[in-house]
Length: 317
Length: 281
Image 1 (cartoon, rainbow over the protein chains, first blue to last red):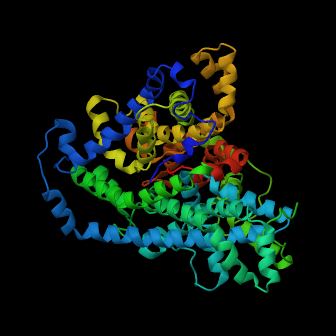
Image 2 (cartoon, rainbow over the protein chains, first blue to last red; image 1 turned 90 degrees about the horizontal axis):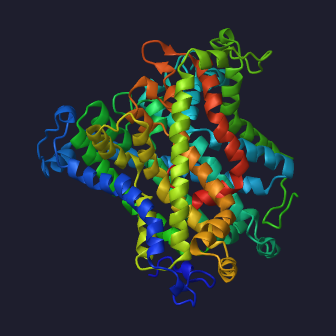
């Protein structure tokens, strides 16, 4: 596989172009060296250290004394026997799946809707989406806590008025395992939909009208046209937003931390939250490092798919 | 323009009605934040919510700004975010220029490494960086936080700016060379000015990432005088006293404002830019 082939386009720094030899080969290295040094120090070195620490018993005392023991492979055999770790892993996969499914399906529906609207309504919907998307996650999380505040939350009030779920005025959402998940799911999906919707909409507007018109003339209905014409063309974009969503949702931290703190107990702790709590609340730093490393490796497979997809769609980069 | 030669035929009024309902649903949390921020405190904590505010009151903003360490925390944020943006812009410009305007051994390897490094989740860097900073005394310092942020933004900056350099035709450089410009002059007088729009867009990405970060600042800056604004915003909630929602919503408005303005400006670019390699959500 030839990676990054787009660099060979005419007009770019093609090897053997007549004027190249005038350039000192040192220049480009001098120009990338500072960046490479910084990246090596702040990214590569920490990853190596993470792997090292994950084999030690580094804990709170070690932070002050610098003394720790080598745990070796025991760290990982213990982790694999830890039911809380397995619970967090399963939870992370299920929650990620629920988030990705929710945001991609709703996002696709919004994208379709946007193509069917007049200018005014489309602008209103787009601005609403961009506002939701633009909110920093810390801000949206504290707003969510306020919306779902027991006693005073407007969501509690509205849901009570609906008279479907009974009196929810004093419901403490973050104190119940399932309700906490529902609230966090709503928050993350609410903020994930705009990017997906607008990206898919942008792709939709690139499809020539003739193609769908032709399908309609051949007697295809709205649904059939979408499945047979639109979807196949949108497939690469769908794949891209799905992969990105998996990466983002797998890594979600702020929203869980600020809404439920991973609780009640550990019941909303995904792997990221579980690693954080282990390392920085319980100060079992070595064990936390092992969890973080496992998380990174699990994610690496998805990330690799993303890199490949990105390189494949190289021309548009 | 109701049609752009797309698949669309504009739907009937019910389609618009559904869209408006969804728009209302999506914008409501933002509206409720503003609405709460502008309400008198006594109306905030009321059993029956007031959906339409009376005359707006700025009391909550006053409380948020004066009863907290807002000025100090804003200063911390501006210093750290500013330094992150400037350093990553400076380093990124040269790196992106080198990777697009020169051919040299190892270039491909560097580019793939940058792409791969960008995939490392921030949570994986948190523990080891914390340990090293603890050891060498960078924990709780501006320099430490800037270095941690560079890990998040630099690979991405290089990758995105590379795209902007690729868009500049090589003839522009050749014209400069024929006029006798030196390599340095071609770079700084011809190439850099041409990628200014791209550099600005990239810097806004960098700004937003660093401005919004809660996890790293919360973990590294444990001294209250070194809090940045996201930590300030979250710290309106304290376990013992409960949350002062009225001023927290005002604070939330203030904190989100610069980001929202940038988003509205850059919305189109963000759609293509994010799918082209922004991985840090």
